[in-house]
Image (cartoon, rainbow, N blue to C red; front, side, top):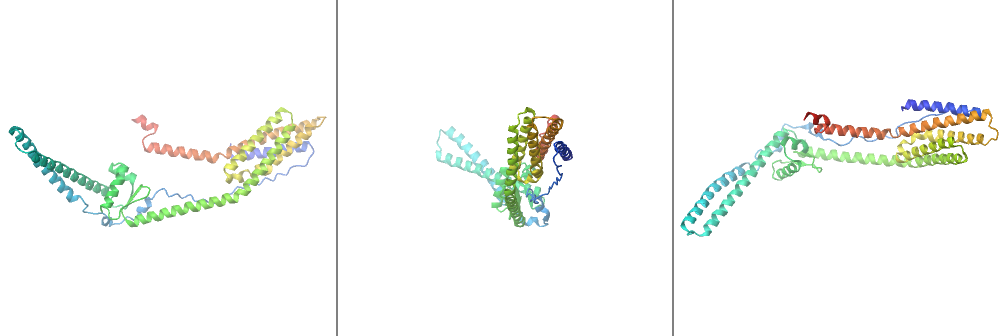
Length: 375
């Protein structure tokens, strides 16, 4: 039910209350229901979720932060050449020695065999070392090409574009930074962003500090709000629960099943409303009218009903008044149920937002139903 429908119920309740009180010859209830709904604070909503604006200051001299002659560029090739030559030379020598030794019946000593074998193993190690150095240089050049003169990139993007796992990529970049391939390279604390200049890294640190300051400010504001609301909320809840207690007390004096059930329902819904306010004190303004107007009016109606019900002679006016009161209780229950439902609106919106985000993420990863159908 919409807010407009809820306010229409307010008008119906007021009309019913007026008719009920007229029937028992009491004063008209003034309808002075001023609903005050205003925000208490403007919370800080800017979250530090993306740093893409750091790269707006892309420089033409990015090359000065990148080693154009990275370590391993020459030594890798040298190791590959010497390793390949050594494998060929010592491999052939080892094979020849083995054949001669078998034919001659082991005339040549084993020390020569051991020496050739060790030189062969060392050659393999040198070749592998050279290949590793060359691969690192190749990866370095690939990273530089992907960066494309940018001073900043996310680890996730670099991982996808370079086709390297994020864990390996982070270790690889850290090794390259230590080796001086990136003169001023930095990886953030979250291992989520790579920056190749000190200036951009300092901008990042400043943004992080700003984020922390904003979070601290937001926390302080929330604490101030909770502190300011605390006493008022507890006072409001106490008033509401006192009214509910009185309504239950009067209900216990009534033995007519129909009205008792209606009052049970009213008490339960009212208590649920107060519980929601305890969980979210910022919504106390939304139930001020409920506590300060509806509950006292309801209590007055119930007291009138008890007084009428205790009359020995149940005349036409008394019967009419009781019927009007019962109908008013029905309308009040309906209004209270709608108010309780409205208090869950933010939760529903949060859930809808979370579901929408999940659907978007699934679609981006190719995990939604349509993508599976197309496969």
